[in-house]
Image (cartoon, rainbow, N blue to C red):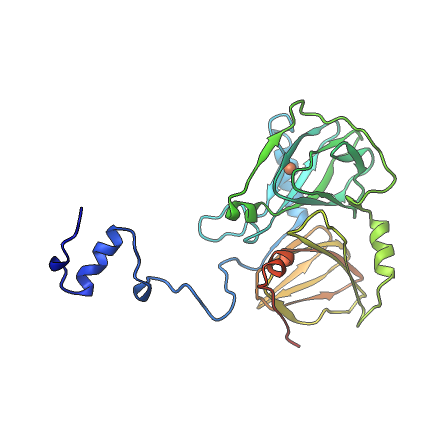
Amino acid sequence: MPIDSADIGSLEQLYPVLNRERYTAGWHKARPSLWKEPKTPFEPRQWRYAEARRYIDLAAQWIGTEQAERRNLLMFNPVADNDYASLPNLVAAYQMLRPGEHARAHRHSPNALRLVLDAKEEVYTVVDGVQLPMVPGDVLLTPGWCWHSHFDHGEHDAYWIDFLDVPLVHRLESMFFEPHPEQFQQVEHKPAASPMRFSAADQDRLLAQVPQQGGVRSVRLDTPSMRTIALTVHELAAGARTPLRRDAASRLVAITQGRGQVEVGQHLFDCERGDLVAIPIWHEYRIVAATGLRLLEVSDEPVQQMLGFYRNELRA
Ligand SMILES: [Fe+2]
């Protein structure tokens, strides 16, 4: 309905009219739109493999891969109405396969990778027809829009952690998903090596090529097929600690060997193999090794870098 300007005698009378017509006066916002430095409602948080494994083993009595697209436990950060994302741009999940099971083939725009925690024999991921073994410590990539499926032809349950940039894709609203028309994808190659797989031995070899600084070695895995996620493997000698730092990225840290502490702000998380810690953006953090410690860090840093928003600070 047209408004007669003569009926509006003050800003107080104008505001409800603006609101009704879906305008917000920039000088009269309910919430600020700019602030000094990064802030987030997402919380530092730890998830424990031993606990998750009990729950997923329980669930496996009642849910199989026939019913579930994936039998996984998503690690969500309890903020607002979120029940999915671990951090604003990343989600992690513990996934389990039983002997004889097949997690059917599908593809989606989000990028994904997995860190294998426990698998005995005959456990595989297939990426675009290429069969890759899943061995503890392996990091396997399934970049966006690659067909991928998992199967366990052995005699033991297999466990791993999935990492995906699905929350980022949710925010960008660019989700595409397609189930494989035949559910199974044919295995066309069984290569000895693939750019989609960083075996534990590959990671050892890469770490051995970088100098140790203060008992810490770190190596970034070369993953040009995934533009949104950076993967870094860290190895700490017993008693070593990483520098205290903060940066304009958020990260998930998974322990692959040993025990230690992840310090995030005021939080101290005692971690062992398979545990995961969420480090939200601009939180001071460092890692302290109680024993020899190996971990995989998964971050959205490439997104912040690509967009020109990235900054970092050493704090001590
Ligand atoms: Fe998937």
